[in-house]
Amino acid sequence: MGRIGKKIRMKCFRKMLSDFILNSISLSSEELFVSKIYKYFNNDVLDLVFDRDGFCGVKCSLPKDYNDPYELFLGMDLNTPPELLAFYYDVISEIPQSPTTCFSYSPIVSPMWAHYANNHSGFVLEFDLEGMQEYFEGNPIWDVTYRKEPLEQLKNILARAVETLKPRHSYDLQEAVFVESYFSKYVDWSYEQECRLVDLKNKTENIAGNDILYIPYEFITSIIVGPKFPDDKVETSKKISKDAGLDWYELKIGKSYPKPYMIDFDKKSFIFNNSNIVSSEHCCTNCSEPLEVDRQLCAWCSITEAHKNDAAMKNPFRMLNQIGKLDEYMDAMGKVGR
Image 1 (spheres, rainbow, N blue to C red):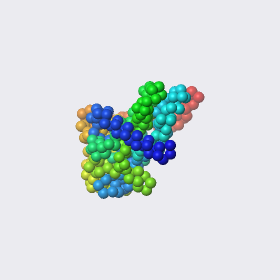
Image 2 (image 1 turned 180 degrees about the horizontal axis):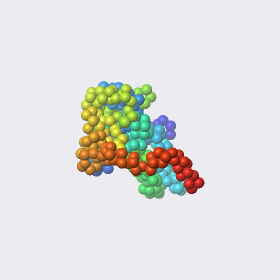
Image 3 (image 1 turned 90 degrees about the vertical axis):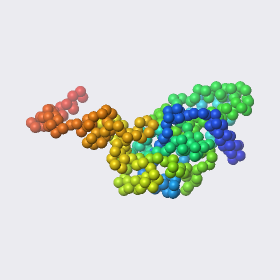
C-alpha cells in the first residue's frame, strides 16, 4: 500500500481510538479513585527532563520499540486456521506507530526502580492524572491489560469479519486489534502497574531525533529521588522541586517496614497507600521508619545493649570461637550430606 496506505491506516487508527474514547465512560483507574500516576527516570536525564521553563519533557517511544518484544504478537492466537490468519493480516497489515509514553500507578515498585531508574539511583515524578487527561484531551491515558494469552474475543470478531465480508466488521477487527496492540502486555509484566498515553493529537515534539511530550509544571506534584541518587545532584533536584512547586521526597528501604517509604525535607516519613503519598500515621521515635502498629520503637530500635550482651553470651558460635574450634566445626558441618 506504500506511504498512502500508511497514512490511511494511521487516519483510521486515530478515528478508531477517538471513537473508542467517546464510547468509554470510565476506566479502571477512575473506578479505583486513583488520582496520581508515576514515571521512572535515570538520574542522568534530570537536567534534560527540566530543560524547558515551566515544563518537564518525557520521552515517547513507538510500539515497535517497546521493551517487551512479544507484546505486539498478543493480537491473535496463531493456532487460528491459516485462511483466517491471511485475512487478518491483510486487514490489519502494519500496526500504526503513534508516540507512546508509559506510567505506573505506583512509585514504590522495586523492579521499576531497578530497570528504569538506575538501580534505585534515579528519580520518579508524580503526575496529576485528571489534570493530564483534561490537558491532553483526545490522547488516551489508559490502563494496560495483562494477559496470559491473546484476547479470545478477537477470534470471534475475525470469524464474523471473514463470514460477512462487511466493511464495518473489518473495521471492528481493526479497532480491537489496534487497541490491544497499544494497551495489552503479557502477564509477566503486571508488576509494572502500567498505564500509557498515546499521542494521537501530535502533541509531541521531535527533539534531537526523539519524540518528547512536554507536560506543564501544574500537572507535576512530586519528585522522588532514589536511595542511591548521586549526592552531587540532590541539591539540583531540591531546587527543581522548589522552582516547580513540587513536593520533594527521598525513597528509603527500611529494616522493618515491609515496603519502601519516603522522607521529605524535614525527615518526616511518608508511605504510599496504593493511591497517594501520605504522611505515616505511626513512626519509630528513634529512626523515623514507619510502623504498622502504634508503638514507640521499631523492632530493631527496640533492641537494647542488655539484649545485645545477652545474645552474645548465648551465641554458641562465640563459645566455639573462644576455644578455637569454630573453623573446625564449620568445616565439618559443610561436609555433612556430601
